[in-house]
Length: 403
Image 1 (cartoon, rainbow, N blue to C red):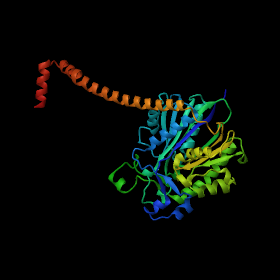
Image 2: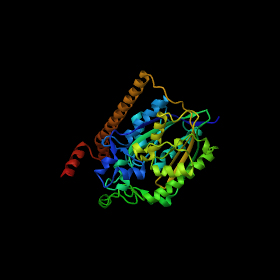
Image 3: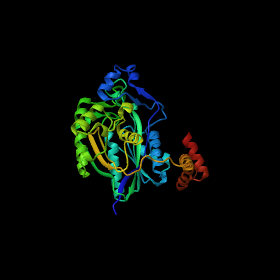
Image 4: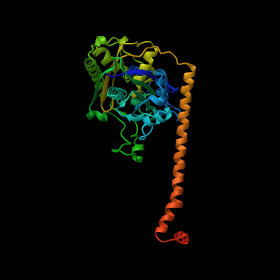
């Protein structure tokens, strides 16, 4: 029997701090009119609290998706976190989310495909479900790009914002869900949008730090030309692959990078009416891999999606990468709120997960201490015994060593 990957839960999170174009006028040489006319962005959210990170935002978005789906963390088989601003090089941000949620039966890993990453992750999740390798897969896009942009570079710092979005994909016998995907890459354009330092090619040094090589660098004009072409091409390809026509599509949710890119590619080239294109980057800016799930949540909340609608998610990003997926929406919307006692039970489970994590950390420290004691009190005397030294010999040996 065929297994279909249906989106059954969704959630998002953005920081409280709003940074407007007017605010940026006091930081760099720019203006609200200049930014909005070139990007369509009015404001973005910024994680100013040091304790608010890619992992914490991802966890909140994932928990919201599980709540909508009515699925517990213990029922999740796999967590994929797409991000270009991970918590660490390693461990994976997804592993930190797994621990915070208490998803004890879930594998977890990060996926790096820049702004295309969320659609890449959806495609992988669909394959895992279709083959029977997983029943429930959490797909997350989370970014704290404000911490890797150069706030003295007006060509990039005005573009990006922070946030997270997540969906839960579940196996279903009902036809629909993710119908088709198109993935692509062209590494010859890798230098057009990159974070130069911090990897094996350019390890962190005093020179890379003082040279500001740990911030996003972008050839805006070249990326613009690439994006306007590939967004239209990928959309056509995925719609055809799904056995649909552009007229069948009820809503397109493009990567929220730049209003002019969306206008040129999706509206003008594909001749998709504006009312069939969902855009919210005016309030959030470019949140990279989080932009599509954030827009999806807002589209659902605003009543733009209903059951059996055909959707397209399409994106592009550093790499260069691009991705598109066609979806037949299967979840009922709006979603009824869970009973208060179910929500209390869910929050209790997250509290228990935090407690288990703390206990495990303490046990590891205890095990390490116990191992040190075992080595010092058992293994070393045993080695001296093998050398033919008794207790006096051990003591004398230690005294000689100290001398």
